[in-house]
Image 1 (tube, one colour):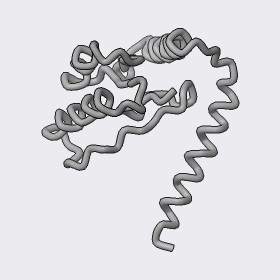
Image 2 (cartoon, rainbow, N blue to C red):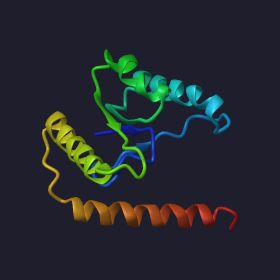
Image 3 (tube, helix red, strand yellow):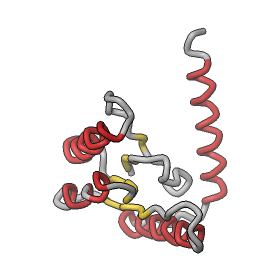
Image 4 (cartoon, rainbow, N blue to C red):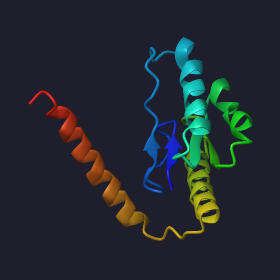
Length: 137
């Protein structure tokens, strides 16, 4: 499975996603629509991508699922709770559980090794950080 992930809100430990990094514009609100547009284009056009996971965090990302509805790929939109709201942690936990169940149902797999996945993702991320730190060398 090759799932393109739009945001750091997505728990990589559930399914090791491909990080979307194609957008080259400024990282501010006036350019975010271009970021989302590039994400949508990559999911639709890249045949090696068979799914997408993205947050429901702003007006631009709320419309992603409607643009991708005919893509015939795995899609999961994560509603993100407001910071500091009572019940936010429980809401986020239920969203992550729903994401895990969505991946399992769509791909016909069981993800029972979450602890090992957490360890794998953390090790991978540490290696990536070391590589970037040593690029000048």
